Amino acid sequence: MPFEIEMAQTAVGVLQNEEGKILIVRRRPGSKIDPGKWELPKGKVRKSKETPETAIIREFAEETGMKVEVKQLLLTEQLSILGLTIKMFVFEVSPIEKNFEIRLSHEHQDHTWISPKDLDKYDFGLAMRGIIQSAFEKLGFNADYHDEELALGKIPPSMIKTMTKLTGATQDGVLEHPSIGRDCFVGDFNEAIKNALSFYGIQEESCHFVVKADPITFPTPEPGKYAVIVNANDIVTTGAVPYGMTLTLLLPKGTTKDEAIKYQRQAHLAAKELNLMVIGGHSEVTEAATYPVISAAMIGFVPTSKYINHSPNEGDVIFMLGHIGAEGTGILASELKTLGNEKLKQIFGNERNIMKILDQAESIGKKISIVRALLAINRSFTLKQAHDATEGGAFGAAWELHQRIGKGMILSQKAFPTDHSTLFLSKKLSFNPYRLISSGLAFFIVSSETGEKIERMKEIHGLPLARVGYVSEDVSGVLIEETGELLKEPQADDLIKTLEKINEFRC
Image 1 (tube, rainbow, N blue to C red):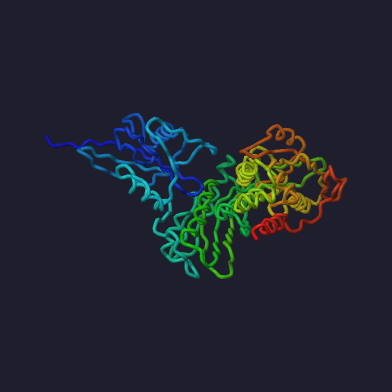
Image 2: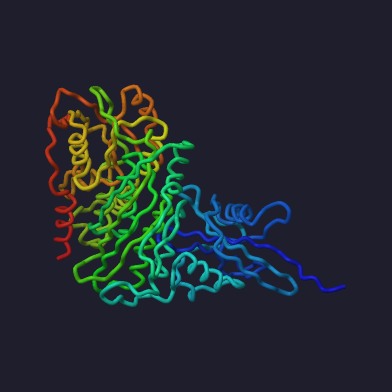
């Protein structure tokens, strides 16, 4: 009788955080298998009871306490050990819940997040190092770049191959994606609109396409992420579902290969989160840039019946979605943290909770996407108009919305959703929080009947929702009830002067 090799299956999970690092866990010293060594969350596939996909979902819950979903199969690996052949299915997974907490099982004693540079720092279990390195490469990471500076001009072809793997979500209708020798994206319009129709539960209907372009020029640790979100925010104010975007990186002299990849990766992860694709772009190092400038152009599709473009009437209700000054609050907190404790004391005195306040401010600064929330509202209700805020803040966005509808608006300032960290910083740094850059905030207008239904919601997809005013023919502009102020055309954002004030403390 010939010798038969027994076959076993193991499911392995790769989870990335916002920085693109991968989660690894460490086995306890007394473990029968690889004691004290690091590994990816993994486990055996139960024969006849589950698939590799369901196995890794179960194993992740058991080993880390996290609920995850499978995004894609990254690779398979086959090992032979003492007559046993093990086939390993390595999946990319993502958390179902945004604010997750890792709770290790009795099998593991520690966890951490690693980048490709960290692979030599840990003692991995059987075959794990190679699997993790292969997973990084599949996800568009390269451990060989490190801190090598880029030369002036276009990025090298070797990097292009890496960056074209970092393209966000997959989409219908892709005929050709940009690559070396093909600088354009080619798509099938009829296939591309399917995602928008599916989102709204419409089988067949003509669609409009919507185009938007916006750069990120303010200092932020995640310009690639912000470029995706601020453009997608604009797209959804029409009711359109974002489809794809081009991304242009203009990088200053001295930028490293690792930094360039980091910006592309930020955009890739944000695009994947919002289910849109990076369909092209351009990257170069130029002396014209003093710090990274990330510019995006985006396209989306909206079924004609869900297009947000109706004329408001007297008495229609105005809602605000999101916090005022969220983006600016996060940017200021990030800059303040770089000053050090002595400088912070000069600004805030003996405020004991300053770091806790700055942490909260940074947390609010991450809530800058209105995409899921506004689309969900538009799917369930008829929105007449919508407009998101960016530079100029809540007041600037209100003035712009008035210009579009050509009718008066009366707003209650005290009804605006406002985080205490924003108000704290505004008092200490003397800026107007209502004129602070506010990506993550939008106004929308509905009928009074619809407003009664929406008002019960209070919050949607983690963003506050509040009724803040109404359309009125009694005023010719935007009137703030509490102060009697009639809003004027927005000037320079208060973020600019506040950043200048913070920079004075660096001297």
